[in-house]
Amino acid sequence: MSATIEQTQGVPTGIWTADTVHSGLAFEVPYAVATFNGEVPAFEATLADGVLKGAAKVESLTVKDENLKTHLQSPEFFDVERHPELTFVSNGFRRIGDSVEIDGDITLKGITKPATLRGTITGPAVDHFGTTRVGLKLETTIDRTAFDMNWNMPLPNGEPALGNDVTLKADLTLVAA
Amino acid sequence: MRVLAISGSLRSGSHNSDLLRAAAEEAPEGVELAWWDGLKEIPAYDADDDREEGPKPVEDLRAAVRAADAVLVATPEYNSSIPGALKNALDWASRPLATNAFRNKPVAVISASTGAFGAVWAQAETRKVLGTMGARVAEVELAVSHADQKFDELGRLVDDETREQLPDVWAALIATAQPDLVAA
Image 1 (cartoon, rainbow over the protein chains, first blue to last red):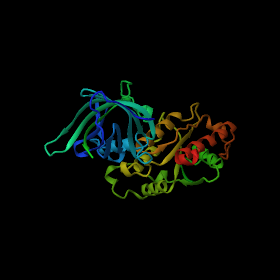
Image 2: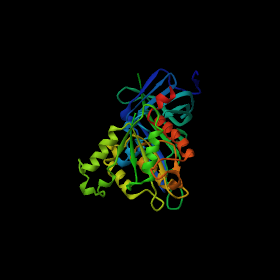
Image 3: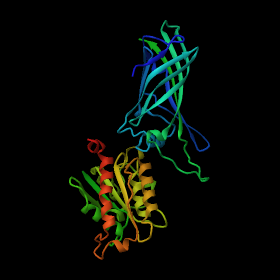
Image 4: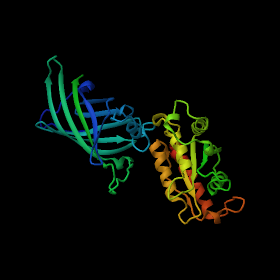
């Protein structure tokens, strides 16, 4: 399928690569009475003529508790042994002012589902070292059970301990290639 | 495919051990059964004894699991739950969590009891424990109820309905262990 790009205002053309030191990939999921957070620091992302592609290494998944990391990498969640990467490939990019919507396919645990990332775009702008950068701050919510991540445990009140809706957040600084 | 059979029951006339023997009879070609019978030797879990090398019976269990391509567990049910000895053995085997012998190991759990529900709760809890340990748990259930009527005095499975379900257990375990092979 060819990518649709609505060039309402300045969708960056050319090839841009994520500066991963200044970028981050994170997730949030409701857990008991609070929110559980994690990051997937080892990832790559490119924006090539309006097509955003990203791939992250599940092995790098980081949470505050080592045992939870182990559980998240097990077959009950990401199944890192069989599905070491999670990916996103866009097929639609809309910019209106500083707002952006990016349609695409997310693949987690070998299962691909459509998703729309929403957020803001900054730039292109030249930084203080003379490098041209684009910032993308994106977010989407997925139902983890659609990706065969069904683990749960009832709390004493009978409610499930872990929510199904997971918010994925990508904060990207892209540098012109 | 080498499959380690673990019975959660210790008594000599165990219906669950009988069920594993019946499963072995129905094992498809290419499956080689290995038996672990060290359950009684496993000491009570004590974190003080949980050093790099654990007690020998524990290390033997870990080695047996590592040497197997998959594991088939049959469990009885005590007080609506997983028997203490089996849970204790799994707790030992789960250490350390990130590198434990069951991590990513394909497993199936079946059960038998003399009651009407066939140890279905113990079976579910065993699956839960194994999943938490990081095992690759096959989505299959076989709960043999009224087991005293389904095995004869020599422990042979004489119930056709149960026997007919055993190939489904094997199919699920093999699919869990070798999804590419099944899909091909």
